[in-house]
Amino acid sequence: MNCRMVKSEIKAYIDGELGRVMRWRVSRHLASCVECQMEAKSMTDLTNEVNNISDITAPSGLREKVLGKLNFEPVVRAGWKWPYKTRPIAVAGLLAIAIVAAAVVIPMFGPAKVQSRKIASAGKMQAKTEQTAATRPEESLKFDTPADTISAKVDNFIYNKAPDHAPMIAVGKTVPARNAAKFSDGHINPQLMIIKNAEMTVLVKDFSKANDAAVFVAKSLGGFVTDSSVSSDEGAPVSGSMCLQVPVDSFENAIEKLGKLGKVTVKNLTGEDVTGQVVDIDSRLRNKRAEERQYLEVMNKARRIGDIMNVSNELYRVRGEIEEMAGQIKQLKSSAAMSTINLTLTEKPKPKAAPMGFIQKSFTGAVASLVGSLSKIAGIIIWLVVYSPFWGLPVFGYLYWRRRTPIAGTNEA
Amino acid sequence: MADYRDEKKLVAGLRAGEREAYERLLDLYQDKVYGMARRMVGGLDAEDAAQDALVEICNSVKGFKGRSSLATWVYRVAMNVCLERRRMRRLETVPIEENTLDRQENSSSEPGAVAVRNETKTTVNNAIDSLPDIHRDVVILHELHGLTYSECAEALSCPVGTVKSRLSNAFRALREQLREYASEGGLEL
Image 1 (cartoon, each protein chain N blue to C red):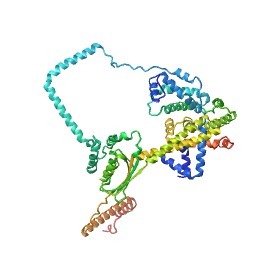
Image 2: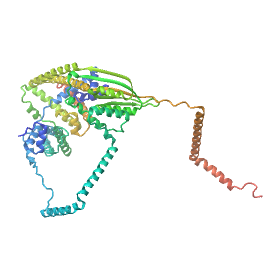
Image 3: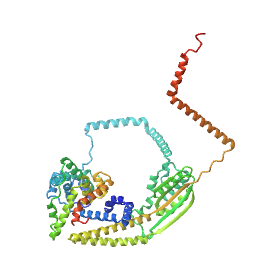
Image 4: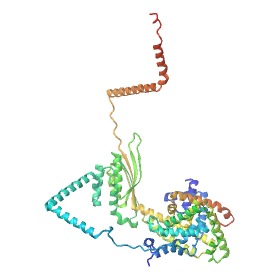
C-alpha cells in the first residue's frame, strides 16, 4: 500500500470506519512511514478541533411554534363494521332465495350422492398431491430430524447426485437450529475455546459433482463457503480449492463427509487453544475501560484548552486500544465458533485414448487432407466471386467482341 | 405518561398521535435540526427552515418504517427540507454569529481562555462554512451530528464510498484554509 492510497483512507481510519483488513493495512503502513504518520496526526488534530465546535441551541419558542402547527387527533380504533350499506329488506330477500335454493338442490343429490362426490374429489386431490410430490423431488431432501437424517441425505447427495439447484437454503435453515442454543448469544465457554483448522486434498472422479457435494456438506452442517476458485487449464485435470467454515461441533463430521468425496491425498488437522489469550485480553479490556471512565471524569472537570486537548488525545488512544482488544476477542471467538477447512479438489486425469493403427491413421490423414483441399478450393471460389468485377468484365467483354467480330475469310466463302 | 426514552416506544407513541411523544421528539431533535438549518441555510432563514423541517418531521413520522434509526430518518428529512430551501432561495450560508458562541462559553472562569477558544471555534466554523455544499453537508452530518458513514450515505442518498471521499477532501480543504491560522499558533495542525 503506497502513501497516496493511505492518505485517501486516513480520514476513515481516524473515524474508525475502515474494514478490518484495510485498517490493518493502513496501520501497518503508518508504522513504517513518517510522512503518513504526520498526515494522520494532522488529520486527528483537525478532527478534534472540528468536533470541539459547540452545538447550537434552538431559539426559545421554536418547540411551541411547531407544536402549535400540529393537529393532534388521537387515532380512534373503530370496531368492526359491515363494510356495505345494505337494506334489511334486500338482506331478507337474499336469505329467502338461498334457503329455497338449498331446499331444492339438496334432495336432488341426496346424502349418498354427496358422499360419493366427496370420495371422488378426495381421490383426485390425493392423486394431485402425489403428482406434485413426484414433480418436485427436491422436497424429499427436507430434513425432519437433523441428527440422523442429515447423514443419510448427505450420503445420498454425494453418491446419487441430487438434482441441480438442490434446496441448499432449506437445508441451511433447518440444520443450524441444532446449534442455535450454543451460539445465539455469541458467547462460548472459555474452557472450550479451541480454533480448529484442517487442510485436505481429495482426488475426485467428477470435479463438478464433488464441488457441489462439498458445498452441500458445509451448508447442511450449518456452515458456509467463503472462498472458492477453479482452475481448468487446457489438457490439465480440473482442480479447485475452497474455504469452508463449519461450526466447531460439526468439524469432525465435516471431515468425515468430505473424505467420502474421493481419495484423500492430504489431510492436516490442527488445533490451537486460545482460552488463555481470550481471558488475558478480556482482563486488559476491563482495565482499559476503567481507564476510559477515569479520563472521562477528568475531561468533565478540565477547564483549560491544553488540559482538554491532552485528555482528549488520551481518550482517543484508550478508545482505539479498547476497540482493538474488543475486535481481537470477537475475532478469536468467531474463529473458535467456526472451524476452517481448506479443501482442494483435483479431478483424476482421464485415461488417454489408445494409439491408432496404421490403417486408421492413414484413413484419418486422408480424410483430413480431403477436407483441407475442399476447403481451399471453396476459398478460391469465394475469392474469385468477390473479385469478379475485376476479371469478369474484361473476360466477358473479350468473348462478346469475339462473337461480334467476323472470322477472317468467312465473307469470301 | 409513557416512558419515551426507548426509541420503539417513542415511535409507537408518535404513530398513535400522542402529544407527549411529539414533545419528546422535539426536545430530542430541535437543537440538532436548528443547528443543521443554521449551517446549511443561513442565520436569517434558519429558524423558518428549522420550523418547516420539524413540522415536516412531525407530520410524516407516522410513515417512518423503522428501516433505519429514528435519528438518521430525522436528519434525512431535515436535510431534504434545508436543501430544498437552499435551492429555492439561492442563499449562501452565513457564518455563525459570535454571540452564539459567547453565550455557550459564559461558564468558563478564565476570560483569556474563553477568548482563545472562541476565536478558534469561529475560525473553524468559518472554514466549514466556506466549504462547497457537498463537502459541508457531510462534515455537518458526520462531525457535528455524529452520524456514521453509512448513516450519512443514507441521509444524503449517496454511496458510502462517496461520503468517505467527500469527507477526506473536505478535511484536506479545511486544513489548507486553517494552515495560516495554525501557523500563528491558534491550532496545532
